[in-house]
Image 1 (cartoon, protein in one colour):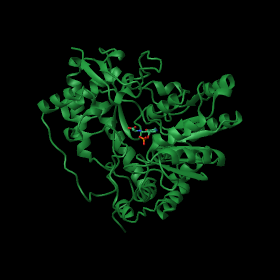
Image 2: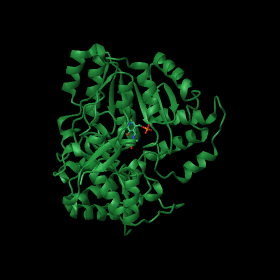
Image 3: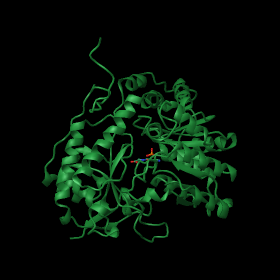
Image 4: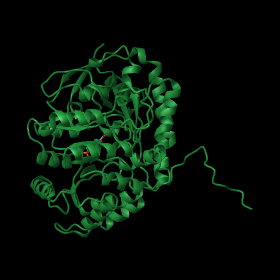
Length: 463
Ligand code: F0G
């Protein structure tokens, strides 16, 4: 007789131990107040040395594994036909069986190439919710980016297992009314700007059927494919016994191609790709790639990067990893909710989203409640987060301004990087900001660029 059994423990531990460490620099409140003022109250403009816990993004900020660093040693830097490319291509096609795999230096390069090939002025590209670089690349090509997420996706407090789903009625209507102007349908998986919320297999299947019935290709912006697949396994009927790689392949089979930022689930510090079925489109995209990114067997990456990504793809589909990953995000959401901090529900995959509009109702959306909360989290505890709201989405290409659908602050959690005590500290900082919330004021923008203003805009507090 054995003592143990396989009943799950309450504590879901990190399924790895630490192999090499990076120091964190402690700062004082006075130092942070000075640095954020110098940065024009824009967290993108801070020196990372002045940040204690960096939750600006989960993009390229994860810890690579021992086996990824070993794979880097295996990198071959041949300009053309590097064996590292074929190792990379095979690893991509193992999960995403598209005929053509075109490496790029990161996700937005894949987007630029795809939309340059497909979009013309006057066209319209629907998605559940376009990520900001996707939207910007579509608009840069003169086309319109339309978000068709389900109504539940706009309400941070409502519970729904697949808040990233597309409203298929509205998709059908758009394709019926303006089908001639639609070059393709996109789906962001998971839906980052909508709160890291998953898309169900059933919804993806329906979107695929509608798009194909209208003769339109479907492309997945598939950065967080593994997290989405885990949610399908957990929440969608019929998938509890399926493996994550099988779920990913089933999703891919519904699409005609994908864009990828390999800085997310593929566990890279840099990288991306565009994968396609169509030969002619792939040939056109490869030509655009050569123009600015590089030869098609490296696409702006080093051979060693391609090797690290191939290994990362093998690791991210591990069920032990995904159980820990998704649980650790929910841990923070549960704790903040318990404190009375309004968080987007249910917890998403890669990030915690605080509903700044609900938390700071005294700050009107056009005075940027998300920016106010993000600055406070930095001033109080050295945490860097990211406004996803009216700063990011409030300005239209014609220069007009209106409140975004939601004013969220995203605490993105880099993969395998911070421990539970780091997260307990984050929770405590949020608690202190909550206690002082009535003292927080809004902001106005004093300088901004014409596109993607959140990266470089300068703000002034409205006191
Ligand atoms: N699509 C989605 C859904 C993304 O989240 C991102 C990047 C991209 C495309 C663009 O990829 O950065 O490699 O060019 N998201 C990061 C973030 C920047 O912080 O969410 P990239």
